[in-house]
Image 1 (cartoon, one colour):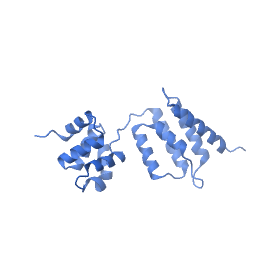
Image 2 (cartoon, one colour):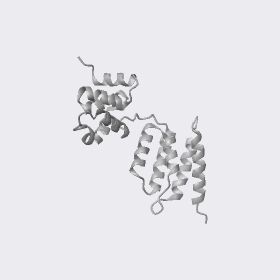
Image 3 (cartoon, helix red, strand yellow):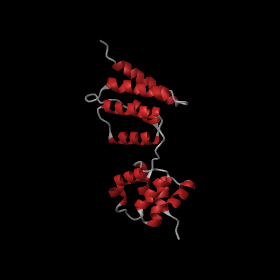
Image 4 (spheres, rainbow, N blue to C red):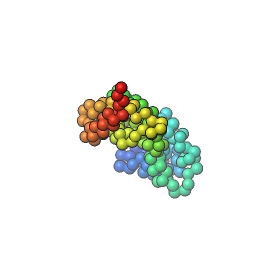
Length: 189
């Protein structure tokens, strides 16, 4: 008798398999892609409702009719899409920073889908430093963006991030860059 998928997923992850590798192992063994992906999500402590939402988003394209011997590729795609991203426990400050990031994204006047996808993943996983560095390296669109709001919002977000117990040194550099850009876009009467 075979152990339940969740037990197998937990065992694979405990032995050092990545979520993509654990998925490939289960899917190859059972030939059941959706239950295998769900088991990996649950083994990562992703709530069932969130796992179901994520898997519904990619079911038709990746899990409904898998190609033979594509389990490893599918696992990598699921991982790249963020299906296996473990939600971080966010503090009130983290949520305030994310709200500022969302305001900055609005002030950009448009964002590439890949950049938006990366930001969404970083918000989920609580990787706010990487999200901040990404936004600080970007810029608002000239015709549709609001540079004044964009840079001012990033300054405020950076100041919040810089007050964390052990701020990443890159935050201070990016914050200085944002302050310089904000000063250049401040209108004087």
